[in-house]
Image 1: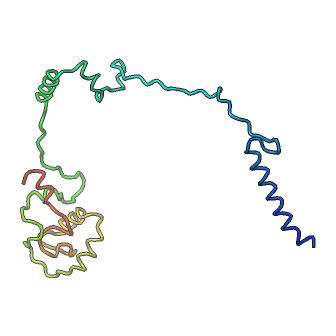
Image 2 (image 1 turned 120 degrees about the vertical axis):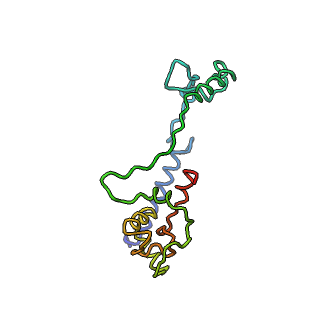
Image 3 (image 1 turned 180 degrees about the vertical axis):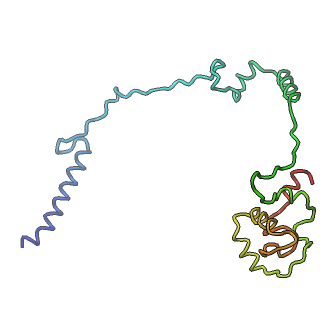
Length: 186
């Protein structure tokens, strides 16, 4: 009989404990247990004062503050500053891309610039034009540029021993010379 009362006894303890805890949070409860009220007089609101950046602090810029800039700049001074900048402006013309020192890896940019055929235009004869072989072999390279480098290094564009240029255009996998050509206006 005692074993039958044990679950009921435990449940009764949980109910009493819950009642006591909830009662402690309610003001003016029967147990006289209260959570002390917050003293409103002791709450202090802190207000941060933010000042505008000053010119004597070189670490801060006020260029986005129209009023601050308008005090020291005019349309005329902007025009003068623009003219001064244009006088010292230097246009850097592109030059030949240097070879990588200590390597014989073909330069794909140079290859893109010396060719002029569009992608997909057959120039070189290919005996085996298997799309499955093309996909499988191209997936072995980390990028189309690395595939083009390997292709050129192994006798391409005349030979395609890896099966990565089935259309015979001289461009391996999905490598496109277009961006390099457009960069130089070709």
